Image 1 (cartoon, rainbow, N blue to C red):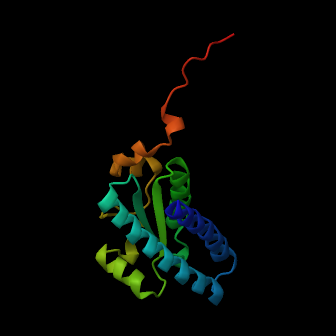
Image 2: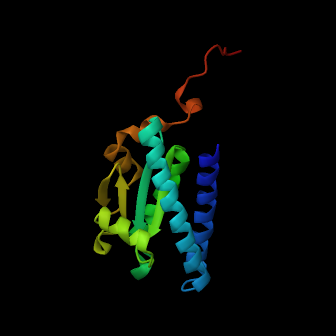
Image 3: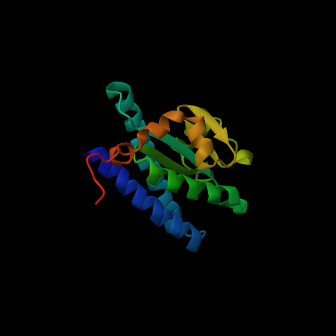
Length: 164
């Protein structure tokens, strides 16, 4: 499935960018890569929204806004939580955006969702904006439909097995 492959590629690119941000601060190539990645994410997000509207798919997009400025420790912790959440719920699409990246499409999203740089990290779930650090449990409570996204093998019990 093309959309699934794009999502996988975006996740791999996100990991490379995260590593580069930590190890190559201020590098212009990293900034350009982040711009390109952000545009791809916005396109994928808009496509996922369209698919959800037309096909009633079970994809849930989550927008995550962070900053690398001023050593935002809560942003770093939030990134780890979201990585774990993405692994737990494969149909949860997480889109990460550096608030300070100078990109007009990103600035438009920041205005639409009323993201304030003094309240980062911020997440947007089902068109609702939440600020500050959130645990996995917090996010599951904010949007209970996420918990219905468990892979089938996790939700069914194994029947017909006997102990010997």
